[in-house]
Length: 227
Ligand code: CDP
Image 1 (cartoon, rainbow, N blue to C red):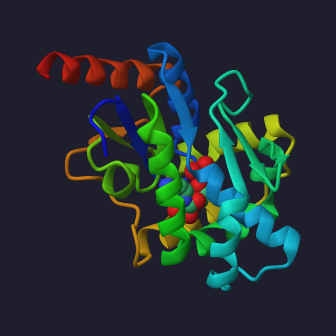
Image 2: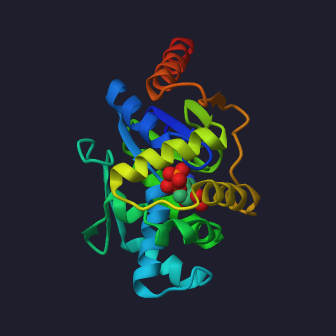
């Protein structure tokens, strides 16, 4: 991993605001932005589309290479993501069919190995804000700034409800879905959701997205002064 680029890792539980905050922070600091959750969601989409069982790790590993990413910051997601050449939008990535199997798919060691390699290859080339679950712990352990962004379940449910409404996705049983995914992500054997020992932990329950962006931008500035 090169120290040549500025890497900002934002990890945290489901619907904690990583995407909104990450996108705005990247824009403010003129960095690239990538949400690694979109890669796991894209793989879940391919599994649904092609009838691959979420437990079929070998077939899923084969499919990772069909996912492509383009860091185009003006795109609605802040980047573009493709499966077999077809672009996937927020409505597709956040459909219930995808969300309901994504954590099972993301728990396979072989799948993660391939995802992590692809994510490191992206980060090797750019100054970037990267969001996910294991960015500070596994993907970019040398990231100069690591943030673990959390919030109460109630706050996260409300944010996800607004986001899904906006994307045109019908949302049911959001609290249960979010808590179940958190449990699967925390309890898995490989790269479980846990703050890196050197991460700044931010509870954003009572903060606006812009307040969180301000707080992280401050951390980035202080870190830069120390170097
Ligand atoms: O947006 P939300 O917080 O709901 O989830 P996401 O970031 O889109 O990630 C979807 C799922 O992908 C997570 O629940 C994890 O199971 C998995 N994931 C992961 O395992 N590692 C990452 N770096 C990112 C996502």
